[in-house]
Image (cartoon, rainbow, N blue to C red; front, side, top):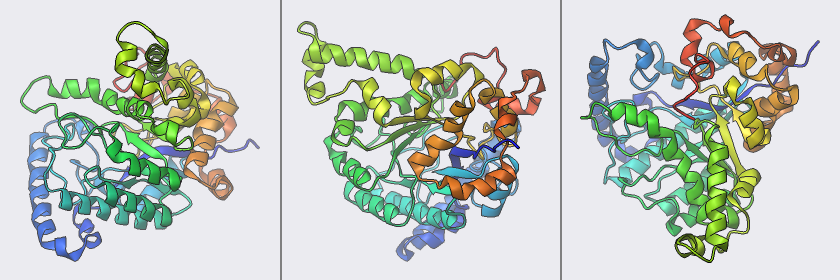
Length: 431
C-alpha cells in the first residue's frame, strides 16, 4: 500500500467571534470594547447591504460573510478539524483573519483599514487576539502552529510579546506588519525595530509577512481603486524582503527565517536577479550612482541577496499552479511550502484533492513531499511522526497525488481557487 502524504498547510486563517474577544482583554478596556464592537456590527451591516446583490464569491469569508454560514470557520475548532480532515489536511499554520479589538473598520474587505492614533487600545486588541489564539491552538496543539501578532508602535511591548509567545508554544512565529508610506510607523528597515528582530532570532521565531498586510489605502472614491489593489497587493508584501535584507537583518541574524506567504512564486527569480544586480553595482562599481547611494547599505552584507534567500527565506505558496513547476525548481523546492488558504473563499477547500493532483502530479514524489510536509514541518516544528497516524486516515497517498488529474475533471466551482483557475489565465494577480 502506498505511503500517505502528511499534508500540512502553511497558510490558513482564524480569528475569534467579535464579542468573544472581550474575555481576552484586560477588564479596564471592556466599556470601550463594547462601544467598539457595536460600531463594528453597524459597519458590517452597511457592508452587507452594499454587497447584497454581489455574487457570493466576492465576499470575504469570515469578515463580511454570513457568520452563521461561513464565519464560524474562523473560530469553531471542531468544524475546522472536521473540514480539514475531509479535505485531506491534518495540520495548519494559523494567520489572523478577523478584526481584533479596536481595529478600525475598513470601507470594504479589499481595503486597508485607516490608521489610528490610539496606539494603546490597538496594541491591547492585538494582545487579546494572541491569547485567544493560544486557546485555539491548545485544542489541537500538535496540529496547529499559531502566529502571534506584534505592533510596530510599541517595540518594547512587541519584544515582551515575542518572548511570551515563545514561552507559550506559539511556534508559528510572529506576523510582521507592513509599514506603507501612509502609515504612522517608520519603515521596516529602520534601526528602531532591531530589538524585534533580535528577540525573534533569540527565540527561534520565524518572521511571517502575508499578502494584504502591508498595503496603503487605495481610496474608495475611484472606479479603479479595487483593481489597483489587486494589481499591487502582492508587491507591497514583497518589498519587506529587501527592506530587511538591505538593512542587515539577515546578516546580523543568520538563523532568522523569513516567510512571504500568499504572494505567489513567479516573482522570486526575477526579483532575486534584480536584487543581485543592484547589490553588485552598489558594492563593486566605481562609477555611477549605485555605489554612492547604496554603498553604505551593502558594505556589511557578506552575501548576495540570492544567497541570503537560499539560506533563510521561504515562500508560503498559496497557490502553487501546475505552470509553476519549473519556477519552483529554479527557486529551490526546499524553500517552498504549500498552503490551502482555508477558510477563504479563494482557498482550495473543499477541492484540495483535485488541486494537489493537478499541481503535484507534475512533480516528483520527493518534490511533493518536501513542499507538502518536510519544509513546513521543519520551519514550524511540527512533529511528523505524531501526525502520521492522522495522515493515514485522512491524507491522500503519494501514488494518488502522483497520478495527476486532467484539467477537464476539475469541478467548475473549484476554479475560483487560483491554483485551479483556467489554464489560459497565465497572468495571476498574486504572481
